[in-house]
Amino acid sequence: MNDSEGVRARAPSAALWLWPLLATLGIQTTSAFLSRLVPTVAPVMTAATGLAPESIGAIAGAGTFGSIIFLMIGHPLIRRFGPIRTLQIGLLLGGAGVALLTPPWALAPFLANMLLGLGYGPSAPAGSDILLKHAPPAHRTLIFSLKQAGVPLGGVLAGLALPFLVERMDWRMALILVGLVPIATVLIVQPIRASVDRDRDPEQPVGPGVLFSPHTMLGPLRAVISSPPLRGLSLAGCCFAVGQGSLFAFTVTWLVGLGYDLVTAGLVFAVMQATGVFGRVALGWVSDRWGSGVRTLIINAIAAAATMATFAALSAAWPLWLVMVVAGVAGVTVSSWNGVHLAEVARHAPKGRVSETTAGATIVTFVGYVVGPAAFGLITSTFGGYPAAFSAVALTLLVAFASLFRSARQDAAGS
Image (cartoon, rainbow, N blue to C red):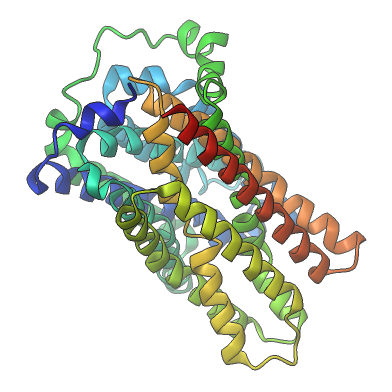
């Protein structure tokens, strides 16, 4: 029996799940807000530290590396301190990363973004642990998706607030103000900590010998490999991440190359982010109505592949309104899968290993976020530009479809 079967018997009331949802949504939004910090202040930060603008890619990679470190070693911490306290620790690490961005040292941005990534790491495994225990089964996928809507919401807030602050004051003073946001979030969620973390194990060892042991570091991936449906879900998550990561990384640059000015290209990108908030909630609602998150993901994979094929055909001759429509559709089809995916991973997790299994699936997903944009750029420069790259992404999303279809058949055969 997996964890969801035990939870199903409880059918918690709104009083039991609303505050955990609001807490995880707030933490997810703050974490996403902090993760957008480096790209937003990159021009002034690189100028102040003497780094080349091209170094932003390596700085971003340091953030991903930090997140993967937590995903590999974080399960004992969640068990020892509880998911809310672990999320609070992550926010404080993010605040420390913000502070480390201010010194004029060339190495500081790399170390700072690693801390920001390390602080972002708990959001998926600890958040899933909380929501699976508290969400009513009939609305579980919707609740997971509401929490994941904090990712594009944090991106929108960062896009609005950070340039506003940087333009009106010294960028270091702006960062100091931003550093207060995670501290405020920690204090806001503190009242529910005792109730949500009541099942934690205070005797769980968390020394370096435990955290960095092969058993701990390989545990998340073993949890994923142990189940054929989980293997399929994880591969699909990686393919979805290739699409989402590539689209977000190259949309503005691609549109500028087609002749759009930067403001217009940014507006198209903002439309994509905004529909992503709606899309995550909508896909969660549909999944609960259908009673199958995998079925939703299968259809979404086909729609995402079709969207990327449409992007491959787009040209400067298309009217702006049509480009915005396609971008809005992409916000739903290409970037709204995350909540449904996490809910399905949690549903299939072995008993007592929700956070560990979610961490393993998220590690595989992060591979897509790293490899996808890099491969997209290589294809663009080597094999015929953006149409070829978007076509390759469409094919990758069809791999997600095939993997999910097989996962659904394996799941049905095992039930």
